View: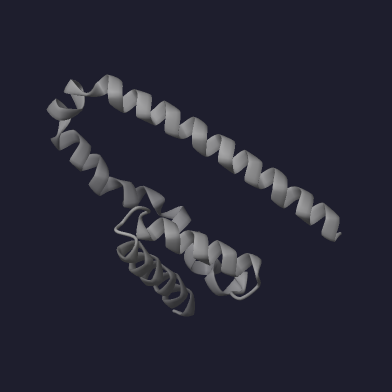
Length: 115
């Protein structure tokens, strides 16, 4: 129960910050970044959220059902804009890979210097 409350509180704080910045960045993303920072700063102990995060990760397919049904329901709109959508997916995927790669390099170097 503690883990759920921790995750929900970070989600709520993230949503609040998102509202303050006119939803420029989604609240769930802000909440995840804040949770990550709290875990790195050892404000939140990993054991506190471990069970809940494992459960959510194992049951992630349930989270994709509503968006998938929405995509199927709007196939005509998707078909008319397929080139734009595919381009956006490819570009955003490459950006995410580049950012995560750089972040992991920096975090890995930080871990090596601490050991």
